[in-house]
Amino acid sequence: MEQLRATRALQVQLEGRLLLVDKAGLEALGLMATTGPAAGPPGVPGVPGTLRTLGGWGRQMKVVDDGQLKALLKTVAGSQGAVAVELPKVMVADGAAVGMRAGSKEVAGGFRMAVRATLSADRRYVVMEIGMDAGDTAAEAAAIGPLSMVSVREGTGALLYVGPVRDRAGDTREGVVVMRATMVTPAKPAPAKGFLEE
Amino acid sequence: MVWWMRVAVVVGGVTFVAGCGGGRDGTERPVGTRAATTAKAGRVAATALSEVETVRYDVWDMLSSSDPEGGALKVPEAGAEEGLWREEAVMGAREKEVMEEIMDTVEAIVAADTWKEKGGKVGVMAMEPKGVLVVTQTRENQKGGAG
Image 1: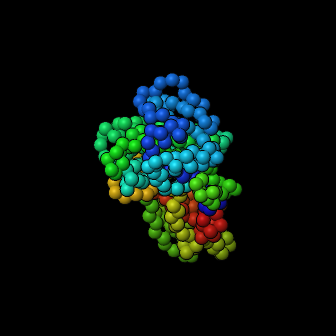
Image 2: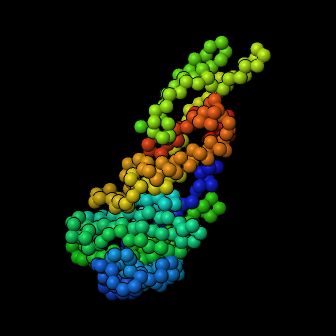
Image 3: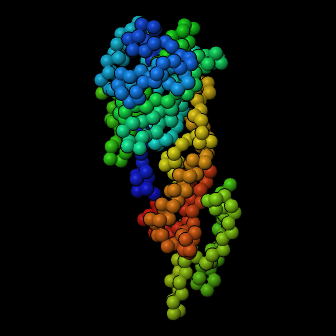
């Protein structure tokens, strides 16, 4: 059974952060505070720096490699009042979904997310289906919108604009999720350190 | 619900195993089989009941989705508890499909001629709803192959 498990063991390591920033911080990340019905042409998935409008719902997204990600996070860390909430690092089987709760100290009602990670047939890309929710009212959930589909090159990440998020002080902040997806196989073990620890 | 039950009787040095259970297709399948016995010129080369064992393998991690319906992604509801979250792990259609593939693979690579579904005398497999594969096989095959 262990041998069988090894042959089928295609997994994806997911690691991420929830960032709470102000408008200036959002712009520093290269995103705009817009959600709603999609407008404009879709971008090209899997290419660093590409903005993509997601099907049926306009959500700002930016695919980034590790270098870009670190630089952006460093910029955000310097922004006044920026907060980074660590999301649970998790390994999921190819095609499997996982849910997580985080940020109950920072976000009113907490932040919830579900991710399904599926490797492409050539194993070069990871398609992440992401659903998010925050706060405790229907209006807040409606502002965040429906599921999003993001395609990133394996081993890279994406910034995804969440929407307005109410923090514990009652102030509205701009929420951004950073998520990196890395393929893990018996021959390619998970990185020893996370993308912010390297 | 998939289930399996077994009783054994030894008569004249030959072990009989009788039981009944639910097949992988969900239908009840009566089983009444003389298990692994070969009589040759006064010598009974039997697979004693003590050599056959039933082992439950948790293979949930090899299944493809944690969503019970194998459909829409579900975001956790608000709650105080932080960390990873998963709904009660019950196999949906997609997981059952993968489980079938796993069972086919095991049947093909582990003592292929012993599985009852293939006309053998010993091996039986069944799936439990929460991603558990139940395998009845000889101890040797459990260690060397299925295990």
